[in-house]
Length: 533
Ligand code: HEM
Image 1 (cartoon, rainbow, N blue to C red):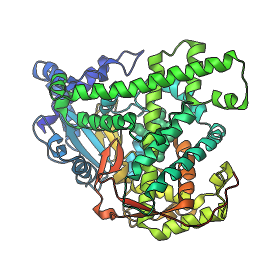
Image 2: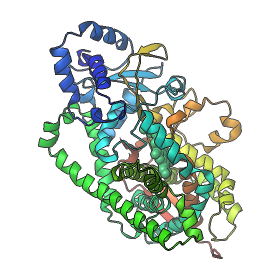
Image 3: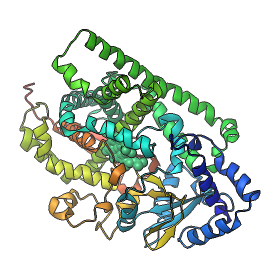
């Protein structure tokens, strides 16, 4: 347990260096900060009483054994799928629903029971993201996902109207067009060998977020070797390594092991893409304004996410290009990879449960008959069973398998007092499989989400989009998008998945993915369809 020494001082000092005007500024950007503060305040300082107090509190919380200075970091040195298993299963075996772990000098509290999660999620007080999100800062800056305090409040207020239901309805055309392109591109894979459908879905959701939120079209679906997508995968993997291997938080080691160079290469692609998107859209908006074009297309697009930011920047001069870029990066990442994973898992589960796939298809057939027509907003509202399938897939395989907060004050959580400075992680993946809430928790049973079966469930037992003030701003967008893509897919294809749920190896590098990519086969439905579009 000596691994925990000094953490209270460390976190107190973090707080001292927060600029009140920029509450998520400097402090996250310095790699190696733990070791620096450890040296300065624990070895050279005289803060033993405070350390003792903190340890006496945190030591009462059950958790796995730790190693001197490294905490539990060594247990997370396996392959990505082994690490995910350790974090989501082996560390989470206390009936009280919480476990204390240490990554280097930082204490972490893992939460996996709804009654315990509620204390954190249901509060306006705990909106500060975990300090582990520092690993995302070089990429996403302090955009909506990673910011906090006044900056987060202001941005959330500014961006919420961009996700109003009425605006989302305007995007249904884009969802349709890109879904149709997806099913067309999948023709080549029909009836053939198992293949990596995730990459097709990712390009589709990337095209969708770009066109709907950024007003840009790059036809990623026709250019499958996307550097952008590769860079996102590599960056996610770096972020998780940096979070779980404390020595990589020391700048020099990070550099000497070649991580810094790889990260810079990824960032060049990711930031370059976002700046280009901003430049293009700004040019287009200017052109549209100058020519006083107020056609339908422009009117609709004016309210899109990026336009809103650009307009705000012009009117208030309060947003720099970098401010806009960090939001573009945030929404590009959060807005496509999460949805692609959700689509992938729903299809995988359909492939494992053919009778559920048939039931979902029957509902779709009852809406569309033999027609190949576009999906409308009212069709989306009718896809009730499909919605339960999507929700149940997000229960078993939540796209974001864990998310973190930092406690700013000593807090009673469950039966324990958790000291300020602790990083609290809600493990959605484990929480969603709590047998006290979900009977037969590993089985895919969409009926769990029928209204009559969900009414008495604790709302914090199922949080794929998080909950409370920092919940997902894009959840309605994602649900609509998923329904259009899946209903378009199911009208044309059947899916079969080859790996059993119990044999799956999962990788939880920010997004939950299967380790083996080629686990699905698709077949044509061979039904004549009429296309009135
Ligand atoms: C199935 C799809 C999705 C899932 C499962 C999902 C899940 C989540 C979760 C769990 C969080 C909280 C993360 C944390 O606290 O670290 C979150 C936040 C967020 N999501 Fe999503 N998301 C999805 C789709 C989307 C889409 C489509 C967008 C944008 C169009 C989006 C934008 C965001 C943003 C900006 C945040 C940060 C919100 C804030 O802190 O105020 N997400 N999402």
